[in-house]
Image (tube, rainbow, N blue to C red):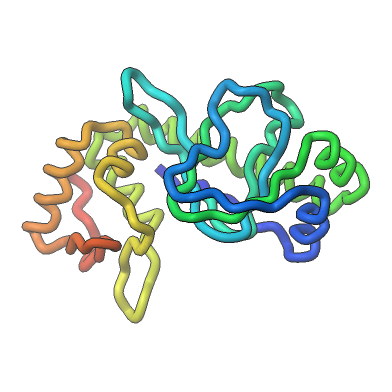
Length: 211
């Protein structure tokens, strides 16, 4: 599953849009918006990290992507009366809430912002299509490898996933049980492919194609 965090807004557009709303802080664990509720506003992320997810069967969730500073969510309100996904704060976050009427006014006045929103929506549709394809064509191991590879960054010559990612969240991202994810990660660590730390996963070498 490809990471679909999206592209940050240019600073000038970010400031212009932020001036239209009210800024406040949400604590980690707070659900900012809920799938199915009326879509009355969009949000700009200034600090912190959030996750976007869908409700699954029972208490299971499907995590779609994460969002960070300079990004925004809720812009799909332009074409929907209700929220199509839930968004929860993973850390303490500072967000600006922009009401629908103000967002629509700025969009009409700022062609660059309108273009950015369109590009963002196109990218999210593309990423979702790729995720659906992966779910349909890859097994759990294959989806886990795609996820780790897409999140990995280089830090001091070491490839790692530095974003805190619990096994529960990995399971939600790849559509599997937590027990299955634990088993695969343990096997990869035993084989010397990865190291599991408290706040990161280090990738020592290319992960095998098959498990």
